[in-house]
Amino acid sequence: MPTLDRLLAIPLQQLELVLEESWHALRGRSRYPGVPPLEPSAGLIAEALLDRSFALGTAWIAGSPDRAAMRRMRRDLALARELYESRGWLRDPAAYHREPEPPTATRISERVTLEGRRARRYRHVRFASAYEPHEGEPGRERWLAHPRNGTHHAYLVERDPRAPWLVCVHGFGMGGALVNLSGFGAAHLHERIGLNLAFPVLPLHGPRAASRWSGVEVLRPDYLQMIHLFANATHDVRRLVRWLRARGASQVGLYGISLGAYVSALVAGLEDDLACVVAGIPAVDFSGLARDNEHWLTRGDHAHTPRDWELLREVVRPVSPLALSPRVTRDRLFIYAGIADRVVRPDQPSALWRHWDEPEIHWFSGGHVLGTRNPSVAPFLEQALQRAEMAPRLRDG
Image 1 (cartoon, rainbow, N blue to C red):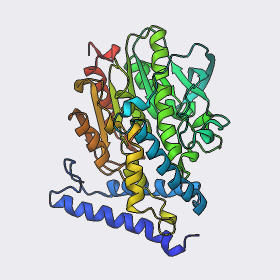
Image 2 (cartoon, rainbow, N blue to C red):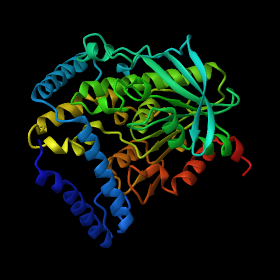
Image 3 (cartoon, one colour):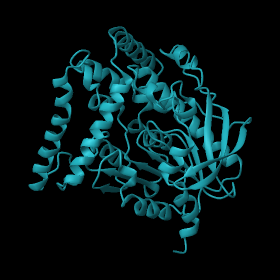
Image 4 (tube, rainbow, N blue to C red):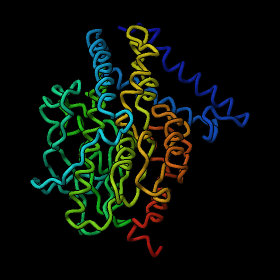
């Protein structure tokens, strides 16, 4: 159990880091090459501290990993690396992913939720995920034994299924209809911009979670589980895209935030004919993200070695957005990110920007938790959708 002095040291360490970066900003420098420097303000420091408080809170909910779990994780990583190398997936990550078929059997029900103060009608779609880890992959049996994850769920807000669709892929901890529709601003996207909207539920989230805490299973010390999550999510999103096309969709674009941006960027390297991909506050380097957010309360007790991090970096390559070239043209790729983001640090969206051959990127003055609420994000998103010819009601604007 962490001592009080260790708990109190965490926010003080983060405050010290932000103040150090602010000092460099006053001298016209940034800690991250190519990223605008912080403009010191009480609000910006507060957002950075909110991000770290969020990371601390999720770590607290997850609990402390035990030694047996850590040993199993290291063993599984070593076995997975051997398997992936023998099958050529480290050299050719795209070969790791199977081609999904659109679902033929779906259950659709009419639902109502609140969006702000108004009722929002939507359709709840269910179909079998059909994803399975490869034979012989470590963690395969654990993944397939999950009681609720095998059914894919998605929420639809539509008028005409033949009109353009934007598939909105949510972040960590989301997954319920209310939080997804509100978090993406469904009213704005649907009514002002004129898009049909589809909200897929990621594995281990919302109705696919075994816990009442959406996504909390993601925080377990099981990196093979995360590889299966990324592969499963990518398979499900591509399957949903193909289902929308089979129903007559004229265009399908992707808009992901945080964890959903990781999945969207991965899909962009596998799926043809996407109208656009918007990556909001994107995580794209899982090994770096795991290292940045290593369990603060047990870092000294179960610390990973440099060899562990290098092994993880190799093993996640088949599900890394940075290992696949995008199949979407540069003028239809868009990124927005926060310069004070301390959950997904600015070097991650910067890496995606370089990997995507430097498409349009918007750096806003803010952090991660409140990132999508930054007032500069909605205008950037509108412009991105207009440029991708994905804004039916703004074409004449």
